[in-house]
Length: 276
Image (cartoon, helix red, strand yellow):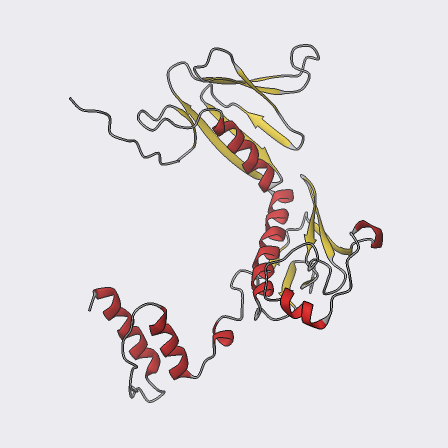
């Protein structure tokens, strides 16, 4: 019996002990999920009752003082029409991942509009998820099934994370730092002059024949504190990540020398070169 398996048996022995500390009979040790299933059966717990609460979704979202939130339903004409689902189809939807039909099958979907010093973000909310604001400082997200279905488990924590990212984005913003490693690799920001650069542009010298140019998209701020570092800032987390990934994609780190564009504190595993 391995050390990991022995540790599992000890943990289960503590679980099977009653209130007086007298140990009950532990089922025959088996590997993997069978050991956990035997523990559930001995404790009288079904599979649905073991994990019916989202650890991420049940934590309320804290709202800073400078952030205002409002929950509003979608307009009737803004959603594509769907066929009214039957009771059987609703049960099947709760067993699957979300799609465009289930988005509005359980009622009128809402959206959470988050306003802050840096901008405004609208987060769509699935009709199977409820968003409530018990007070001015917190926002509570809950699933209509209590987290007992696949659809509820999928959308509960996901919706809460989207709202939390929106609150942080409009209040603090998100930032990604990149660095250039290589001889002669340089980065600079060219201001918009109307002729050569119609918009603010990031210009990169990465060892190619020509310089690479990336127009700065709206809602994103790119700066170069030094000639070999790039900072991407914005209030939309997804957009910041996509722009940073696009810059890194111009020349990813080399597998042998590590030359290229990488994130700050990124660990690049280098391959050993040929040895004579």
